[in-house]
Figure (tube, rainbow, N blue to C red):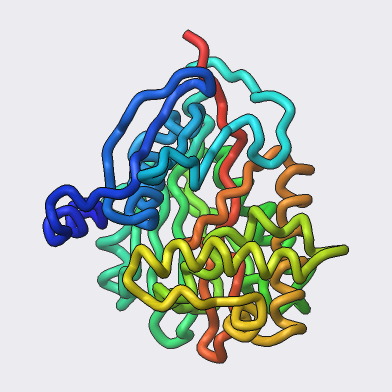
Length: 306
């Protein structure tokens, strides 16, 4: 059951205070109504994951006063001036699904499945405690997909900046062939999910990262404002201020380092033609509480021509 369905089932009838719209930036149509801003945003993320091409249109959420409280425009993502155009024939360069036989092989070796997606599976490796991530096959034997290479670039960036505590630790990557397809595997440190409370605080971190150099206090105030909206919707005390945000991010130095890390990651992604994809689910933490930027990119959102 998706978050929207759960909230709708238990929310009082008629208490749907937020409306989700999509369109082309000029006109828009209603998608659905929700009892909370968090539920509306979760629905957007679910739709994006189900159909990536839906990222190519404008999305917005309005409250009962018809005020826009959240807005997404693909043309503003990563400050990209325009989209790259690609023909449908290039679709085979994207990462593909993972053959079921790979999971069977790893199961027999004692690997524990932690999570999976369309083109990615993560396993707890026996004996080492490391996480083994498998990426879907490339265009063919001896060839990697653009998605696979994007993650390789990310892993190399993290290794080059391994002194930064807010980047994940990788222990190398390698390829293997299975049933005539080339796969990519990489090992990384185990990380934990953030609490729902902390996810609300960092949900808009990417949007305020631009203040990291000159106005970090402004960034924390904006995070507090965004988080208080979500906390109110969740029935929690909405009394966060910038000092509370800093405290929850690990203190003054850790908060600033995390803010600057997101800013630097955005710059790296833009340089390589990636789009930032740092929703709250793409932050994790170590056992000591350090927040880590995880899996922050998607390839440039392409318009496929027939």
